Each structure stands twice: as C-alpha cells, then as structure tokens.
Length: 169
Image (cartoon, rainbow, N blue to C red; front, top):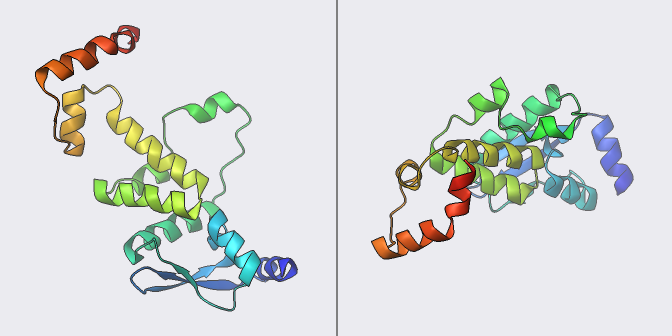
C-alpha cells in the first residue's frame, strides 16, 4: 500500500476530502499530503475512498486547501540559518492569508494542529503572537474580547510576581 501511495503521487492523482459539514473537496494528492494526518491516512487506505475530516468545517478546509495549494506550487526556499526562521515577520502571501476574523484564525490553528500541517500551525500561531506583542494586558483583553476576572488585589499580586518580565523590556 506504500507503493500505491507513491504511485498516486507520481501520477498527480486527486483525493476526496470530506469536511465535518459534508462538503466534498477534490484535492491533488501532493496538496493533501501537506497534512501529515492525511498523508498517513493515504498511506494506510489509499485514495480510492473519500477521507472524512470530522474536525474541520468546509469553510476552514477551503482555507487549508488554498494554503496548501499555494505552498506546494510556491515552495519556500530552505532556511539555512535557524535564527532567520524565528523572526516574527511573515511573507506577503502568508500575511494576507491570515487577514481573517479571529474566530477563523483560531479555527485555522485548531485545523492545522489536527491535520498536522506544521508550516500552517507556525504561521497562524505567529500571527496571534504578533497581535499580542507589545500590548498591555488591558489591550490584549480588548483585542481578544477577554473578560478580566481578577480582583484588583489578585491583579497586583500577578504584577508583583511577574515584575522580572516587565523589567526586561
């Protein structure tokens, strides 16, 4: 069956993915295999039968397929210097891709995690990190619509305990 998987890749075949809400997606095998989860399913079961993805909605799967297709067609040059990779800057296409509402962004993080697409998980998490960077706790709460449930006393305690972090900035 491993041979079947290799054959499928060579012939540019398609696999059918089914989202949690029943939408069917015909996806190039190479694109589908950006997901380690799907890659393993294809290796186990081949591509004859549709692959159900119970944790991913059609709306999010559309975005995941768009992302994977773009990155299969435009592979990133290998990063030699690991320090370069850590930077928080995000390339043009990826940056535009992440211009979505927060609910979608968080669903993309969950989908990338479930589907095991490391590049997409890194990108979406980096996007959230950039939204937080340099903001006060109050600004972060406003950004993500988080209710502050600390009493003033608890908040003062947390500030005291984390003074070292603020001193570094």
